[in-house]
Length: 183
Image 1 (tube, rainbow, N blue to C red):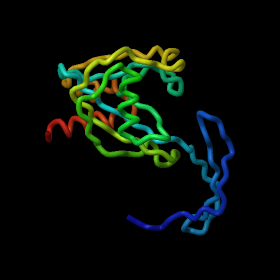
Image 2: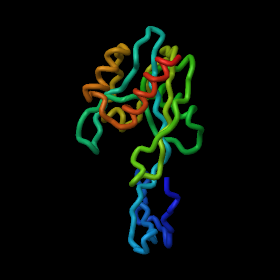
Image 3: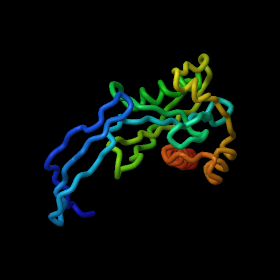
């Protein structure tokens, strides 16, 4: 890989909202050009592939306004003031009412390295058991978030046929399957 980096000449937030920050960087490119580059400054994300004590995979289905569709995905959310594993456990509990018996880090990836500043931390949680009801926030309730349980084979099919269609869930799902097959 090339180590030719872009030099940041100026940097300032041009849009600052609790849900979304856009940063404008003035970049000197290696070829000598200077131009603006916009970056979505996003908090880190934790996503967890939970498997319950019956061997069922726990997913959530909810409306996502950006895409204008209902999605099938793994529990996930942003975090700032906690570590990634704690955030994954919190999201699992909040969105599904389940807690993990054991959690394994599957690595991390970028959601969109071209435009977003954050990375997504991937986890596999096994031995999940219900400890209560989901504690959804107002937006999750408005999105009609529902818990869905699938067999591992049905999850594989949902990944293959596109029913699981968000990039972070696709990455987490395939990493989890790899971890499960390797033991």
